[in-house]
Length: 238
Picture (cartoon, rainbow, N blue to C red):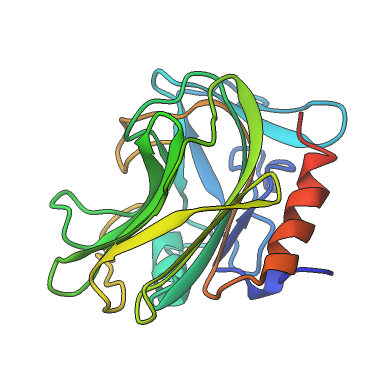
């Protein structure tokens, strides 16, 4: 593979089907971070295909998912035990129908917020990583210009490393400006939370559109790795 694969990822959702029980959306990585869908109807729970790859469709009103238990082992503990702390890269392959500021791709932020990290929109057209350290201070990596996103399917990649004040971003494989701000210290997490996809934990700030992939790695992609990931998904997500 031309980029770090699922075995290197903290989470690797590609929405390619349900678990053996037929009620959880399967995660394709090493941690079995399966998703409980909320306000989505059986038997598909929003899963489908565009003819080239799989997708998960959310209405932007009340639909989202959260990490669900597997064999009695709490998935949020597996996530937090393997979650990025000092460096991360996020790959988002999504259809953005009606994006708005603070819409969420993934979040494990607590209510403060004083702990955790989120991938969200800082404005309707810009993606941001936000993360909090043990003192409750925020670090952000934010696109410096509009993507744009509205009415489009995009492959967006964001990378942040606190100690080096590093912020990088790519849209459809093209490098775009991004800015780092805030704390230089590692991310700290609130293990009591249930991380959510497509909303804040517990619901709200919903994504409106399709997710094809949401992948999070505890490392920084090179430019060639980011472009390879983008090229792969641009051929499949429409």
